[in-house]
Image (cartoon, rainbow, N blue to C red):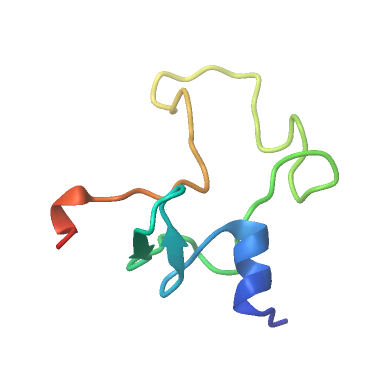
Length: 81
C-alpha cells in the first residue's frame, strides 16, 4: 500500500527530504536521515496500532530503558551552515 508524502507526514511525522519550519520563524530545515523502518511505524493512543498495556511488561530488568521518546526530530546544530 502506498500513501502520499503528505498523508505519511500527517500520520508519522516528517521523513527524509521533507522540509520543516522551525516554530514561528522563517527558518526551514530539511530532514536528511530517518531511522524509521518503513512499514513498522507505531501509533500510540486510543484506536491506534498500539494501546495502553500492549508492548509492555510487568517484569523489571536493569538493562531496559526507563523512558523512550518517539517521533522526535533531532537537530544537530553543528551541521547548520
